[in-house]
Image (cartoon, rainbow, N blue to C red; front, top):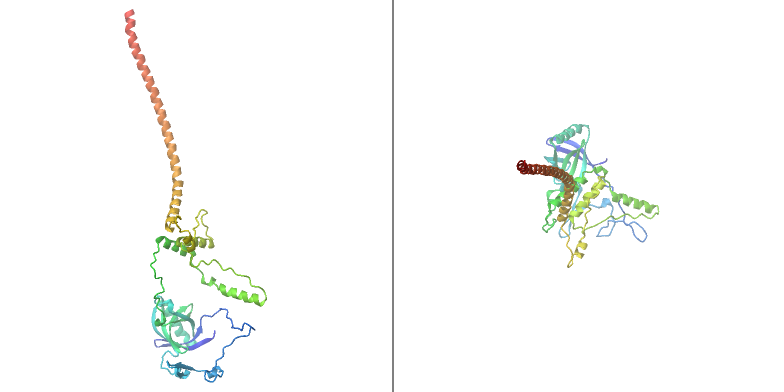
Length: 365
C-alpha cells in the first residue's frame, strides 16, 4: 500500500516516525456522463471567468472568498508556515475508554505503519500499552490543509487511526424522533426480543454488495449484446403494515424457517392488515376485529386449554373406572346384606310359628 502522509506520533516525549496508509477502499461501480445523442463523453473544463481561458492544474491556486466577492490568495507555503504542532505530527492528547467515543464522529480509517527500524520499538510499546489498558488514544493531526481529530486503536498487530469529526460538526437530532406519543405494549416488546434472538448474530465477512454484483451483471450483459434478465423487486410494503403484532409473529416464523428451525405444523399464521383494508372494512354495521393483543391472548388460551384437556382426560377416565368398581362393590355388599336380612327374617318367622304351634300340640295330647 502507498502511504499518503509521513510524520510522527507524539507520545509524551516519545516520537514514533510513521507512515499513514488508507485502511479502506471503494468498490462501487463508477459511471461517466455521456452525450445521449452520440455517446460522446462529457468532460468538465476549468475556465477562468475573466478571460475565458482554459487552465491547467499548475495554473490553479487557492483563495478565500470574502463576503463582498473579493478573493484573498492563500498558498501552500502560507499554510505550511502556520505555527501548528500537528502539521507533521499525530499528537496524542488523552487515553479514554472506547465506549466514550460517539460512533457518529467516526470518519475515514487509516493504518499507521512504523517508518524505519528505529521506529519499531516505540511503535510496539504504544501498541502493547493500548492493548493492556483496553483504551483508545485521542489525538490531533493535520491533513489536507486542516487540523483534524483522530482515535488510535489496535487492530490485530497494527495501530489504526479513525478520523473523528469535531463535536460541533455533529448535528443535533432535534425534531427527528416521532412527534406523536406512541405506547409500545409488552407483547410487542416480547415479540421484538424473540425476533432479535432468532436472527442471532452474523459473520460480517459473509455479507457482500448485492447491488454492485447486479450492476456488474447488467454491464456484462449489455457488453455481450444480451438482454439483461429482469430482477425481482421483492415485496415492498412501505407504510401499509399497521398490525405490528402480526408482522412481528410472521417475521419470527420466517426467520426460523430461514435458519432451518421447524415451526409446529398447527402454528397459526398471523395476518398482516394493511391500512387500506382496515379503512374499507370499517363501515356502518361492520364487525370490528379484535385487537392484536386480544387475538394473541385467545390463541394462547386455546393452546393452554388443549394441553389441559390432553392432561386431564386420562384422569377423568381413571376416576370413572374407579367409580364403577366402587359402585359394583357397593352393589355386591348391598345384595349380600339383603340376602342375609331375608334369611334372618325367615328364621325369625319360623321360630315364631313353632312357638305358636307348640301349645296346641300339648293341649291335644
